[in-house]
Amino acid sequence: MSDLYDNTASSVRSDIIEMVFGTKTTSVSEQEETLRLFINSKLRTNLANSKIVWKRGIARFPEINHFTGQVALYTNIDVLKMAADPRVSNVLGKFYKTSSDQLGLYSGPPAVIVKPMGAGTSHPIVYTFGDLTSEQVRYTAFWCLTSHAERDQSGGLEVLDNFETYFDLLSAVFDFKAHCKSNDLIHLESKWFSVDAANKFIEEYTALYNYYKRDLSCTLEREIPLKTAELYDRYQDMFPVPERFAPMYWKPIASQKGHLVVFSSRQAVRTASNRDQTARIYVQIPLQPRPENWDGSELRESYQTGKFGNWAKPGLRRYLRENSTEYNFRTNHETRMALVGSNKRLFGIE
Image (cartoon, rainbow, N blue to C red; front, side, top):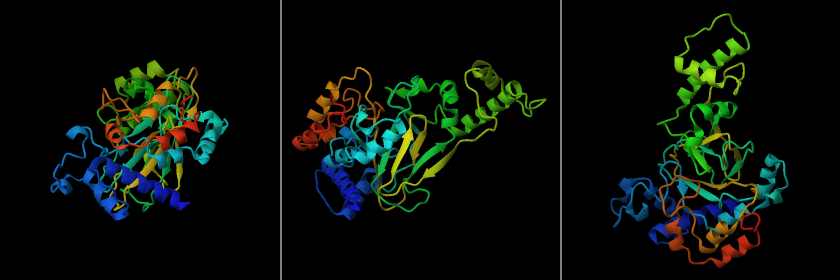
């Protein structure tokens, strides 16, 4: 089974290198060394074109995002085969409490996350994959392809513990809906959200809730800012909180080769920085039940042409990025369409 993960990881590394640099290599050490060029500008000084690691030579469009590790690689046949592996749908079917054959990739194909040595810590992301006002919780799986030392700064997965407990309250206060990109995901960026500020607010809100709703103390034990008091007045009847304040903190998740880690649309996730010699590689697989009145024509066309993402706005920060580099590199569509065609419901084309 280890060969599955090693071969897929090698296939991903090889595709990225060939589609950007035009060279093909199967040597793991050479692949790892080349991937570092995407992150470390000092290593690119001897390249004829040091801007080759950016789409159209524009720095804000990196082929591999330095922090999130996102890569616009959606038609790698080995990655598509992993998404079709029944182990994934069986696990997620238990979360949705439905049969596995009722799930599909309605938000698009599986995506890869690659964090070479030198990649930084990503900002937190909430993978919503649906309307925030919906009560339907959605799930996305991260299948880990590589093994690493279980320590800080090895590119591992981290979840913001207790975020889910206060999700509805935080969503209203920080206006998550305004920051949700096309119902795909929310980037919890530091310019409008911080864990420290959120913890401070929740602790103050909890003190007010306990005082007024539960009559747990004769007097408030701390001074409450006016802004928090105003927000409490607005939301006290909508969002109850636990009696005991539970601070949010980043919790590392075991993510070794072969692990299948599942996150809900009410959890905040990030990847740590990577100082390991080996690049971290994940396959992200967002399965969900078939939406009402689903029309699979757009996805069908994308699989047929190999064209994914918003090409008109390549900087749009969605789950699927514009994949022009991959599109120009990939010439064989028959193998992909044979796999997709035999799994029409899974890939959301019917």
